[in-house]
Length: 73
Image (cartoon, rainbow, N blue to C red; front, side):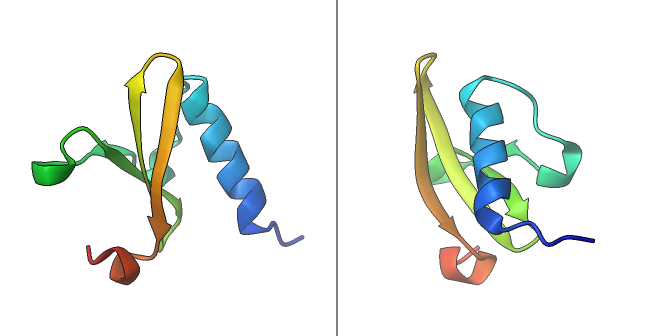
């Protein structure tokens, strides 16, 4: 099996999000709460989390990327 770099996985997820496509369940995409209530998070890899938001139909903002411990989850 060939290794796929994280950047390719990241590009694939960002492309889906930017085009309002659903992510596969393994990405565990879900809304956040509290201070982050207008954000969502999804998993690029099991311990690589992307926090993002879509403030309107034409924009995707990538806010933070890191492991659970780096993001203090």
